[in-house]
View (cartoon, rainbow over the protein chains, first blue to last red):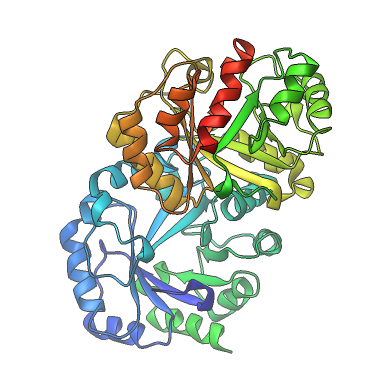
Length: 227
Length: 227
C-alpha cells in the first residue's frame, strides 16, 4: 500500500500522450515518489494498459487515477478515486463512484484505494468543464478542505490548477486547515523555482504537462523536493 | 463523545411535536441509549432549545440531528450530520454541509460530530421529498452502504423508512456489507415484535412516531433490545 504521507513529488503521465522509452526511464528513476497514470480525455483501456506495462518495469510505485470505468484494470500499486467537491453535479462527487461500486463491488481492493477530494481552480481546464465545476471562493476552498478531512476522512485533498500556476497564498492557507489529510498541489509547475514555491506549502506536488514540453525542467522539479 | 458502536436503541424526538413531562421522563429513563432531537419540518431554534433543555435534565445522552442551520446550538452530547446519499441534488449530500462549515468552521467541535450516510427508502416520507431523493434498487442501497464505509469512513449508515416498516431482508443484506460503520434502521417500529425483527439485523433501531401514538408500545421497543 502506498503511504502518501511520505511523498513529496509525483509525476502524472497522460495515457493519451506519447513518451519515448528513454524519457520514461529517466522519469521513473528520477527519485520521484510515484508515477500516476491519469488524464481527462482520450483515456482508454488500451492506452492505460500499454503505459502501465511500461512503467511497471521500474521499481517506482505506479498508481492509476481512475477517470473512466472503461480503463480500470488490476496490477497497479494503488488507485486514486477523485471526488470533485466543487462540481455542481452529484455525478462527479458520488455518482460515478456509486455506479462503479455497484458494478465492481466484490472486486474492489479497498486497501489499495485512495480517495482524493478534488477542488478544481482553473476555469479554462478541460477537467473543470468535464466535471461541471463552479469556481469556488477562497473561503469555499478552505471549507472543502475541512470537509474532505473532517467529514469524509479522505487521505488526499487535491488543489488542481491544471495547466496554470496557482495561488501559493491559498495553498498555504489550505495547508493550515489540514492535519491528517495530505495536500496535493497540481498545475503549472514547469521550473525548479515553481516547484520550490509550491512545495513550501503543499505536501505533494504533481508535475505533468512539462514532461511533454521540457524533460530537463521536469527532472529539476524532483530535485527541488529533495533539497 | 458518544460511542454509537455500543448502542442498540435510540428514541428520536421531533421538536415540532409536544410531549408531556411525565412521558419525557419515562422515555429518558427507559434504558434507551440516547435521545436524538430531529425532524423534517417546523424545526426552529426555539423548539429545539426548549426540548433539549428538558432532555438534558436526565443523564441519557442527548444528540442533535442537524436538519437546518437555524437550529444549531451548543450543549449537546453529540451532533448527527446527515448526508443523503440517494438525493439527486448535491445540496443534500455535501452542499448544505459545505455552507455550514464555511460559516461555522472555527466553532465546530469535530470530535462531537457524527456523519450519517442516509438512504431514504419511503417515497411517501416528507424527508424523501424534502431531500429530493430517488428510490434506489437493493443493489443501489448496498453500494451506498459500501460507499459510506469505504469511501467516506462514515461512523453511521442510516436506512430510513420514515413512517413505514421496511424490508428486513434488505437490512440483513446491508448489514453483511458493513464492518466498521454502524447500521441504523428507522421507520415504522411500533411494537415489541417489530423491534425484535429489525434489531436482529440492524445495529441500532431508531424509534420515533410511536412515541406520539402509544407510549407503552414505544417503551416495549427498548425492552426488545435488552433481551
